[in-house]
Structure formats: C-alpha cells, structure tokens
Length: 321
View 1 (cartoon, rainbow, N blue to C red):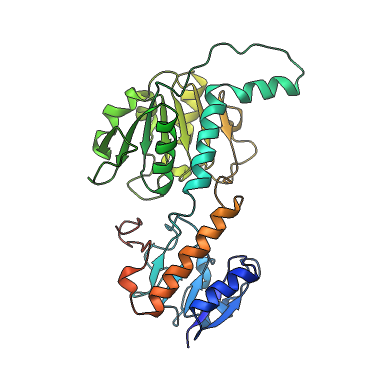
View 2: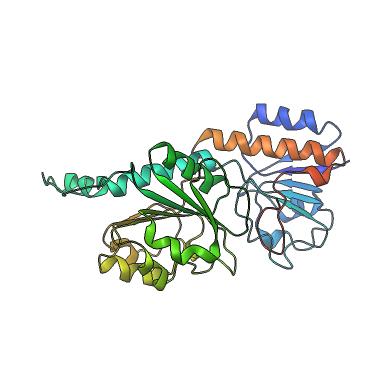
C-alpha cells in the first residue's frame, strides 16, 4: 500500500478526487507549516513542496509531485536519492501569471504607477506621452507555459511576437519568429517588451547582465516572473537610474525577499511585487495543480510512469519534453 502525503491545502472535493484515483492508497493530509520529518520519511509519494532538509534519508520516497513550476531546489545533486521521480506543476500557472504580465505591461506603458503615486500625493499632473502594445515587438525569453501564454496574449493585442528558447523546436502559431538563446543579443535591440520566465540554472544566472540590459532598445520595458537571479540586480539599478529603460516590472528579485534598504525599491520606473503572481491567488491555479497531481497519480499507480506529465530532468532542471 502506497502512503501518500498531501501537503497542498485541499478541500473535501479535492480529497475525494485524489482518493477515488488512489483507492488502494493510504492518504495523509497536512500543511507546509505542520508537516513533520517523520511524515516525510514514511511517505512513498508526496504531493506538494516540502522543505528539502526533510528529504534527506527519505528511503520510502518514490515520487514527489511539486505544487510549483520551479524545481531547481529539488533537482540539485544529493537532495533526492537516485531513482526518485520528480514532477512539477508546469501548466498550472500560465493563466494567472500571463494575465499578471499583461497587467504589468499596461501599468508600465501607460504610467499607471506614476499616476497612482500622484494620487497619493493629491497631485493633478500629466505624466506625458505613452506608447501602445498594438504595433509593438514582444520578445518572450522562455517559452514554457507562462512565457507562451504571455506571448499569445500580447499577439492578440496586436504585438509582433518573437520567442527565445533553449533548443530548436516547432514555431507555435502565437509567435511570428522563433530563435534559440544564442541569438538573444541580436533580438534585444528590436524589442519593446522583454519578458523573462526562466528557471534558476547555471545557464540562466545573470543572463541579463549589464551588457545585455544596455542592448535593449531605449525606452523598452523589462518583465521578470521566473527567478530573480536571471537579472544582475545591481546592473539593473544603474541602467534604470540612467534612464535607459522605459520601465521594469518584477515579481521576483535577487536577493529575495528584497531587503527594505535595497536601492532597487527606489529605482525610477520600477514596479516590484513580492512573488505573488502565481501561488494560489487565483483559484483556477490550484485546481490545475490538483488535476495535474491526479493525472500523474493515476499513471503512477497504473505503472505508466513514462507517461507522467512534467517529469524534471535532473541534469538541466527543466521539464522533459
């Protein structure tokens, strides 16, 4: 009998859904704040993110289904013993985070954040000219569920869309052009919007360094919803202070949480949110996570592990295609 530890905040309807799939399994429900090392050690299957310090010596563990799309903390050498399957929640967050990104695009481009600041100070003040998404160029760096959904929405609003991914592949209909990371330097000067939805890997660390930030078109907008380490934060502060970019919106920072005295808070044309674009703020996100877990549980119990969704490649930290 498989012991399944569920750490995500399921309701009774979700429990029924999972237990109908795993009729022969023993389910235990807890929360990230209350889960114990003893529970983790006893589990054959874990649904949800658990502190990686609890996974050491988890000899019974066969598979962990993350509730996050990011899996870099769990795919590092030595975190999980060899043979343990790791799947993430790619596909759950595209709706919520892409809508956040479109909202952030409008906020920066139409200067809503400046007008809100004026409102707080009771200032009736014109902030000058703006531009339009219609006729713009969007460069989506990272074409997983999140980057792809954002590019599709920007295209629907009239933007010319360019995608960048690690490897060659078929160009989806929502893109006008598709390239690999090697072409990034040539593409940055073309874009009015640059979106980053990348995991934390050695290859993505400071991908947007000062040189690449300065390659961006003057007045362009930069969005980051992947990992804060993709951008050199100190370089971003310098570039914003000099007025090179039209604005920057981030839901992730490096360091994170961002210290109260960090200069990025006060950088001009900067909008920061505290890693809230995903999580469970949108109920549909959580419903999708539960459905991914359920579909994978069904395949796992049927011995069809090779068909499970979102299997993580431990060498790259990315989802296997």
